[in-house]
Image (cartoon, rainbow, N blue to C red; front, side, top):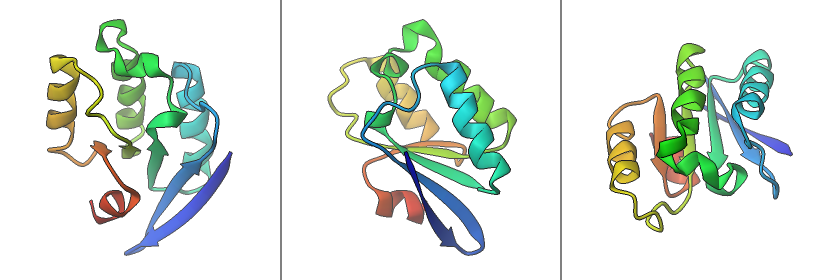
Length: 116
């Protein structure tokens, strides 16, 4: 796993780069969050491919549990990917509502994430 640092208007943003799944469960998400939090990052960008597909099945509540931890630590997270492949209306609504705020965003590119 590599952490690419982006600095934007004195905000330190961590982009997680890996060919492996980094977040497989809540514990993996907490490990990542703690690691980046203590390294002084203000925001996290992670790619969809680095998160277990189970995260995107809202029925198992994994996404809610994980994203609640990021909210509790006030660590905004942006997930980069192509979410059009998911057919779940609940997930589409969740993504739509999340993107209205600043805490959790689902975007299609790093450049969009850095602008947000």
